Image 1 (tube, one colour):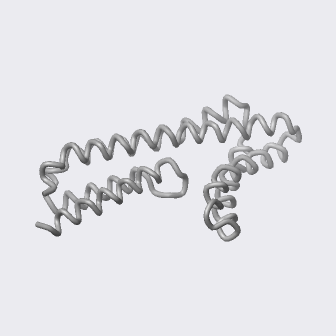
Image 2: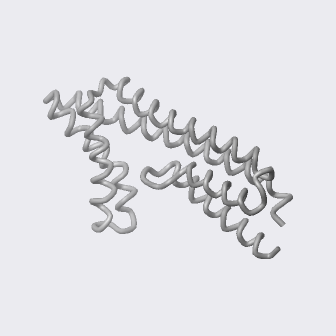
Length: 172
């Protein structure tokens, strides 16, 4: 019984990491929460997590849609081209991995913010050769992405809360 309580709190910690991951790009988010709920379902029986697992899966699918829509709408609203969007993706990867060895504490977080911004600007400058339009498009892409990540964070918190409220009495 003590092992189950220990496992429960380890899975809750994994879910909290999933909440953080839903806001920070390149870290697993709601999918980590779904996985942790599934592990608890394997241990205690899926009947005990049916509501939480269903809600988490629906919110996972919704978060993928929101991620796509928020970035797309932010880019569209700012008039970004495909070049800017591709540049933002490349900038995200380079910013996340490139700043990791240079700044081990703030590097990846700073890279996640600066990488897409600079990548989108470079992509737009290559396509349009206009600094003002490139800056506007880059900011639109980054703002859309940040808004999408914040909404995903709210959905991840909702998944965690549903899990806790539906399984708390059964955790001990």
